[in-house]
Image (cartoon, rainbow, N blue to C red; front, side, top):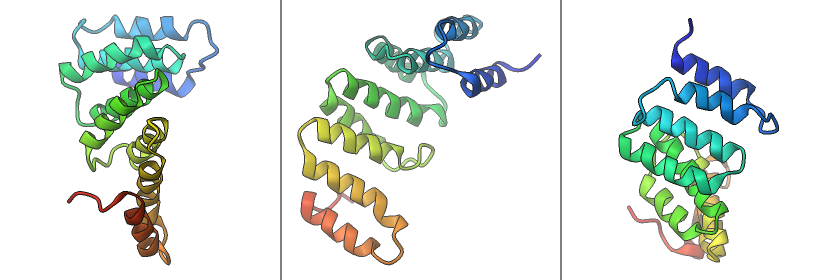
Length: 160
C-alpha cells in the first residue's frame, strides 16, 4: 500500500475541480490522520480552496499553521492562505502574511506574485508593481539592475 503522502500526491496529480467527488476523496484521506495533524489540515484547506470555498479554507489554513507544518508545507500554506484572503476581500491581511514570509525559496517567486496581487487589490498599485519588478529583475541578465532601480523609485528601497 502507498504511503499517505504518496496518495495525497496522486490525489493532486489527478485532481479536477469539476469532479463532484473531489472534496469527498480528500476527506477520506484526511480522515486517516488525527484531527490535529498539521499536514491533513493543510490538505483539507487546500482542497476547499481548490474548489472555490476560500471562506471555509481560511480557518483550516490557520489551524494547519498553528499545528506546526513542516518546512515544505508551511510556505505553501502561507501563500495559499494569503491568496484566499485576497479572494474574500482581505487583501491587506494577505499582503502582511506574505511580507512576514520573507525570502523562503520553496514556493519560488510565488510569494512575490501573490504579494503583488494582494497589494494591487489593496489599492497599492505602485507597491504591487515594485514587488513584481523586484521578483522579475534577477531573471534579466542585461537589465536587472535598471529594473530594480525603477522598482526602488516606485516604492522605495526594500528593507534589509
